[in-house]
Image (spheres, rainbow, N blue to C red):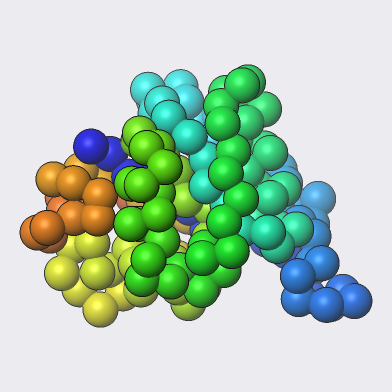
Length: 155
């Protein structure tokens, strides 16, 4: 099975609350470019899992623009990348999902999947893994890693 991790795009520095921080225009543009490029390269997620925070939901919506009809699941466990997140995704039967998360949790999960402590994730970074199961029983294989600079290739 494939699991893709993505950190939300660049968000506002200040808002009424952390939960209400929205993507900046530049953040939206970079996410669109990254997703467009990944789609051109053959990336085909089966579902989107995001947090209830605005910036995660906006990033999920930008992915869905390129993949109309792709199911979006909003899960509070994504905020901190809680240990039960992968169990819950497996339980509800999502196949080849992309998780749109936040730092530091998404960086820690990215590293844990390959037996490391973390993997650096700037906003709009995406990584795809091949796993034996969800949750994985052994370290996964990092198939590809796309930092936000990847978007420049598709402008």
